Image 1 (cartoon, helix red, strand yellow):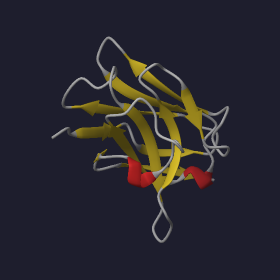
Image 2 (cartoon, helix red, strand yellow; image 1 turned 90 degrees about the vertical axis):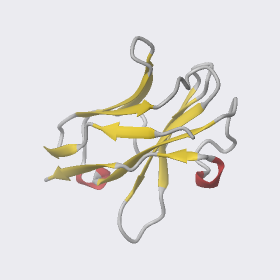
Image 3 (cartoon, one colour; image 1 turned 180 degrees about the vertical axis):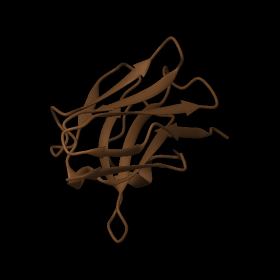
Length: 125
């Protein structure tokens, strides 16, 4: 059973930056599609960014150009660099994984098998 542990959330002001990390309990980069999702109370979980085993990336329109998903190969940790944060980015952020070459569409919540517990991001104006 793969476990995912997120960290790096916190509170920042508008325009600030945060870097989220997701540490898997086993090596996942070569066989798993990895993604970040976010959710606010009362709303559906939405995809933010995804990365395929070969490195191809996908972003939600709302974060494209501000967020960057990456794999830290030296530590086998998944990262999400978030810049120019806005109050609407406030949410619980979740790391997700599925053993697949790709997920189509990339932000299909039901397609992902493993989920972390989440890390809270709060952006104040």
